[in-house]
Length: 449
Image (cartoon, rainbow, N blue to C red; front, side, top):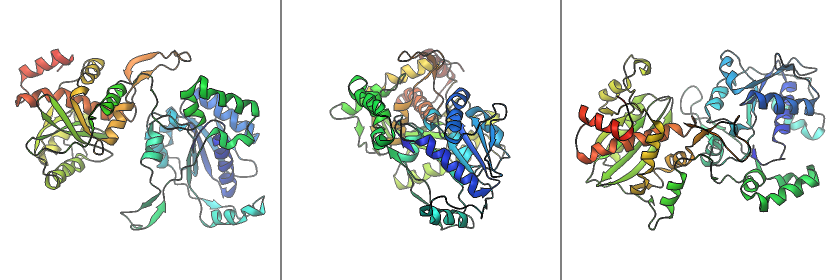
């Protein structure tokens, strides 16, 4: 549920968890919050207020009375300890606090408890008898996420921008079968006005004038990108949109020029495809994937080569592309596997001064054009890319920044974009990267070999 203040996200999730704990024997539920302080001072206290059940601070576990089911409470840093735990239901509180969907994906892998219906359980209201009987006949494993609007963060990306209502199984014994993937529920604060104190409603209504940005986000549940504190490039990208003609729109492929690629490689692998004409750079498309081997991406490049008539030039990779720690299961490095599939990487030196590279890249946006459709996801990430805020030292409207980028879903895309910027000077000269050119690049970008 992605909704505004006062819409009952926490209460609904807790009561649904209690229902699933009563409906299935020996069920195990988990309630998660990113930070321990928020978990202890807010989420656990809300649970006790709604249910009357006290949670021991030592174990952070509670038995549901009259059942053999249990509910656990964890903060984000504890989730790695769930390797051998099978859960029946999960609730992520304030999902927008997490930097990416990494924890969501980790938890969905634990949602596999064998559910045994409690046939003695009956609905307290006859109106729900049909629902209860259906849940007994078709046991429900469920993950719930509650979040406030937070611009184009991972919750917006997953449930609004890229929302998938129905999924079809492609492989395995259930291939061809379809199932409901996700449900999205949204609400403004005013949608629930009859359950909220009148003074509260009057006060948040006044925010429209005295705090319009927060009113849109927290009261009206508006997911528009807001002026994110510490954003590196959002102003430059917005300026490209406002130019006449705009530099974000239709950017056709020019077969007279080579198509170059820039990569950041890891569990999340990102690549930008672009052409360079004189001093201008034209970004044709952006692609990212999670958990795929390097061949997945080389196969895509060859498909685009055949279908779109791309003629490839340079393929720029990160400095650690030969790192033995990044070897694939067959014992070969990313560079070696890519080379076997026809992609020859040029790796750039290690980034010594990240902030200098970010600022250098920023200066080159005026000479950049982006295809709006092909680069949509990449542009979302570049706009979101921002400096990490020190929450402990920030005071209200006065943020205190760490001087380092936030490590979230946007970082890999931004790294690949910086690599493109650092590689482009070598494209224009039509030369390969020699030792002397590496030294020149080090002086210009503050890099070290």
